[in-house]
Length: 142
Image (tube, rainbow, N blue to C red; front, side, top):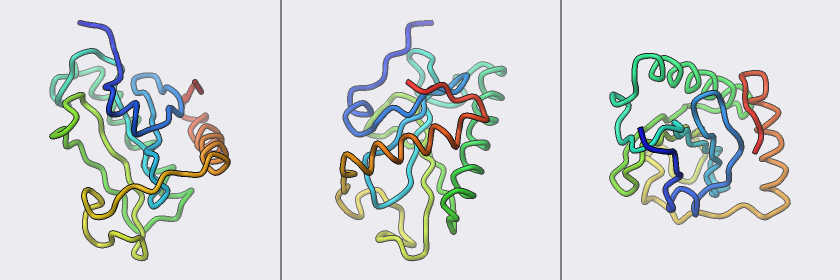
């Protein structure tokens, strides 16, 4: 299997929060929604079914742990979990906390509004909070 490299578009749109045992955790740079992306650190993957059984079980465990912690922390109304990959072929799974009062509700967030980047102080504070939130489930900050 080839080495893991983060797709340039993901690198441009996100901030690295850290690594779980399998996945790199990214924060989407859009302050309109609490939005993490999990990227399995395996090379050349496009689809979840391409993970071997052990990695697939680990992915689902990490995804559920991240989703549960996000929803409790942000007190969301709904968690959107999606792996589209139409624009970025590298396997990555979005975890977006949604609120009935968010600017795109009830529609999907994609293409609804342009991203609103975090201010630098807000971004640093949120990154630290997410690292602390996910530390109990094995996050190693980067």
